[in-house]
Image 1 (cartoon, rainbow, N blue to C red):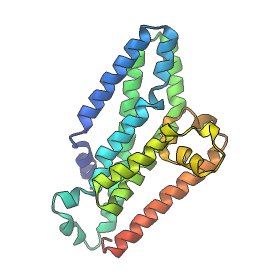
Image 2 (cartoon, rainbow, N blue to C red):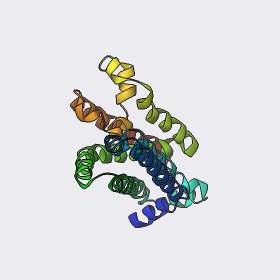
Image 3 (cartoon, rainbow, N blue to C red):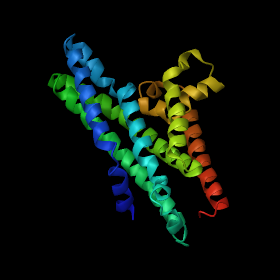
Image 4 (cartoon, rainbow, N blue to C red):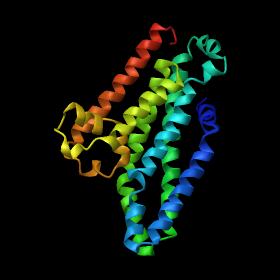
Length: 241
């Protein structure tokens, strides 16, 4: 069942065009950086996840992995799925697993694009530095991406609307780009809006030096656990479990 759910996600029409667009845009960024100086190329290569990578993985997750939770309704087979008396919970958990695994795959694919662009424009020594920087930030990117994919999937399951999911999750995801955490009071509402969502972890340029990292990790666990439990409760009330 898991391979089938993964196949449904990867067959989404947005996947290939989005990846090609990222590759093209990244190539242009590296090219223009190379016109300035080697130092600028190195800085650009190390900044992939600060903006471009974060926006790209957010789009891919919202466009591809979250939609799997609304496909039954769109394809007119929801009632058939609901008749699976002992399999509905298994289907839900399998789809969460598929969403998380696809998010991991997308992160690794985007990381390959980052390193490919850097390899063409920097010296071998500088490329080693890029790889080290990438390896240091990758755990945060992977964790944030998987958690965001699960969160978006649960929101889609709650609202039964892909459009509502994209709007709500996209708004929360983008707040980290709009607010300035260094100018905010710790644990204020604005602080949580800027750092309390998974896009802050995916950006990875500030979280590695975050003094409240432990508190943020605890908050992320509470947020994802609460979202999953709420989803299960609402599904139970709708007799979807």
